[in-house]
Image (cartoon, rainbow, N blue to C red; front, top):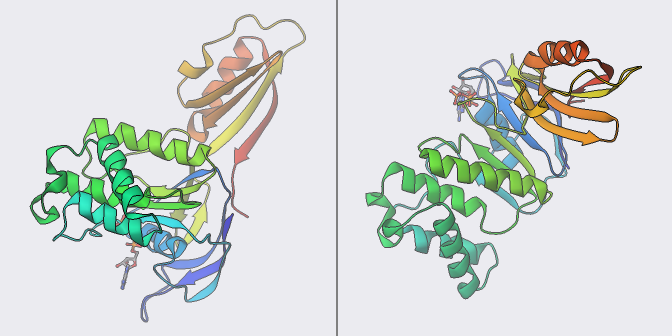
Length: 271
Ligand SMILES: Nc1ncnc2c1ncn2[C@@H]1O[C@H](COP(=O)(O)OP(=O)(O)OP(=O)(O)O)[C@@H](O)[C@H]1O
């Protein structure tokens, strides 16, 4: 688990961009940081990834292997996607053969076809972006930090990347990302406001519903209710992960169908 304690970051004499951030990102969690332009999201991610230092406070538990996708740049323009990934794979400790193989797998997965042997300088923006994304997945990382990774990706590649992120979290990685398109399915959302992290209106809550005194009148298709992200049904109870903004509506639907509310808990990894 990577942890930030009272992290302050200031650039020069300006007011701090991060003004005392406390955050825990446990293994297996997909955490999305949101906030307006200039709120400090990239700064926070750079600190988590270890490419920027703190002005004060502490970063604890950063694992040895961290995959990082910066908001922009990051490619060696003189290399092809394949040689760029093969060389970074070697730096990550893979044998030459394993690095080449891993590069092939990632380029296939992200659908980098004919351009994989041409210089990145001449590649499309989307292909350059895919190369930078792929390098973060060369070896299994305990921490993945991705700053607007979906920028420049077509819809199909964006769906592939979403699956890769969910799989990485399911495999036990702590995943932190920004995505200005909106909330990523399954992500826990925290908002940077005034240099501090809050669980905003975009946060998630877990709702536990049980059968009321009689049998519920009807079982809605829970997954189709607006704002419901995950549904777990057991013998006589239902657990829903719901966006906070949609929580009232989901609860009112459940009550009107004869369900009883056992608990409603914010999903938060803030301290
Ligand atoms: N290297 C730097 N030197 C000086 N100021 C910086 C530096 N990096 C960021 N800043 C300033 O810190 C503030 C936060 O920037 P940051 O890029 O972290 O925000 P952001 O939330 O990622 O913004 P955006 O959504 O526009 O990408 C901005 O005012 C920015 O100008």
